[in-house]
Amino acid sequence: MEYVLAALAGYFCGCLPVSSLTARHYGVDLHATGDRNPGAWNALEQLGARRAWPAFVGDGLKAFVPVAVAHLAGGYWLAFAAAAGAMVGHAFPLPDPGRGGKAVMCFVGAAIVTVTSGFAWGARVAVFAFPLAQLVTDPVAHVAATGVLMTFIGVLFIARRRAPASAA
Image (cartoon, rainbow, N blue to C red; front, side, top):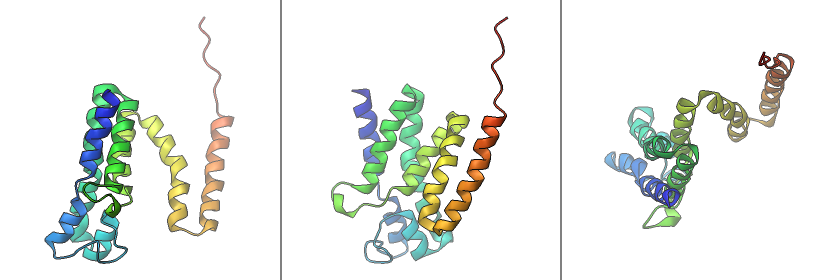
């Protein structure tokens, strides 16, 4: 039951149209301009960085807040439920589920909780997620080059693995 409540809290936070409200403040309808996505990236393209920063912060916070609360209340899996809810709420908001965003900044807001609450795991997730994010913005050759660098890191981890200290 607590997972359902965390997911619902995340969902309703995710439904808050922060980027659309930010853009509307400047007379811009994100559903009618750019890629017609009501998210922070479209707000950035339509408004510029100086005016769009509240959209980025707000879209991140609408996942960060419920995820942080859930993490404090019950740990990782409860926080995961809140993050999933926030991302779904951003992508499929009520009352019009067909007009949501892509949930990128919701993911970022949730990931910040993971990084700050368990840096070792957060760093691992970030390292392995980077090439996936890079696929969206860079040519495949750049992603392959990143893979070479990550392989170097992996070799170092294997080569420098220390045997556990004996219990004696």
